[in-house]
Image 1 (tube, rainbow, N blue to C red):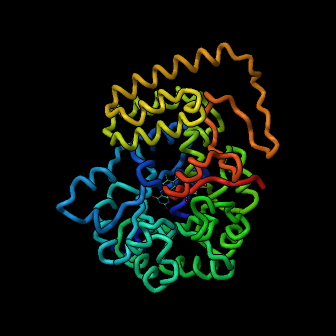
Image 2 (cartoon, protein in one colour):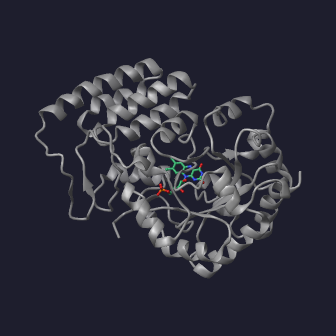
Image 3 (spheres, protein in one colour):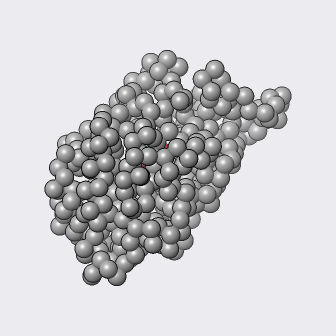
Length: 374
Ligand SMILES: Cc1cc2nc3c(=O)[nH]c(=O)nc-3n(C[C@H](O)[C@H](O)[C@H](O)COP(=O)(O)O)c2cc1C
């Protein structure tokens, strides 16, 4: 199919994606169909699938993998399917399988984890510009839908700009820039560089999405103003508060219940559900460690409903008894302080976390939110 038959750049952004400002990030095991339904209900205007491993997706003997990573429905649009790959033909073959059920295919060039180094994908391709050009160009020339990409920045802004321009010249119709370098992960996460993102935006003709440093709804407008980008993507901010794009911080039990109800209608892996409940409930779990222990063990949706109900009863009682005023105060670092039954960002400070938590963070290489406020 000729690339001229499909919309490009801003026409694609406006007419197909609907000029979105609020974008749900691709998240392995966490931006699955059920979560996307919840996130869209609370303001996400475009959603990405979790990263899909192109080679595994094409493996006919591994049907389970395909079921686990690819599930969608009529109202799950606009949707961008993200792949990781290092072979253009395999990427194309994988993308062909989803092109009729989504609006664009994205190439993951940002994953910094050990598994990506071993598998030779994500940010570990960022020095192989010919390969990246070919991965993007094959989709640009042959798919019926546009190709997009998600990158991390280099330490040198000039190099990031050249890199972004190369990706644009290969045929990408939208670029997401996560403003951290490859080494910024785990305990070294730190802040995303919005100034680099601003310069990339200035240099490109295609729409640019900014990613990084979004803890609260207000950060989105701050980011739009500071970078001039077209839209803002949130990953962790959305996981801890699925209503972040709606500008509200609901009670944790409300989000958990809504999500579990969606999971009743949309088959979802128990491990994904568990991951979400741990994050939604995170501020409350240190006060209810028995629930935390049980949540790690239960294996059915019914049990998760029962646990959630138990926690809801306890938390609503505390909330009623509490004489906390509704006015939100800020701590000495400028972070908002919410009662622990309210959805809120997971703020990791260098000194504030327990030793165990720090080790867990390092071990799992979680891409954590900021260490300090600007
Ligand atoms: C649980 C989790 C899974 C992630 N999986 C992916 C992924 O599949 N593809 C990707 O490009 N980035 C992935 N990321 C990175 C996010 O998309 C995003 O770039 C990063 O978390 C920074 O954004 P944030 O500050 O809003 O969290 C993941 C992040 C988290 C927390």
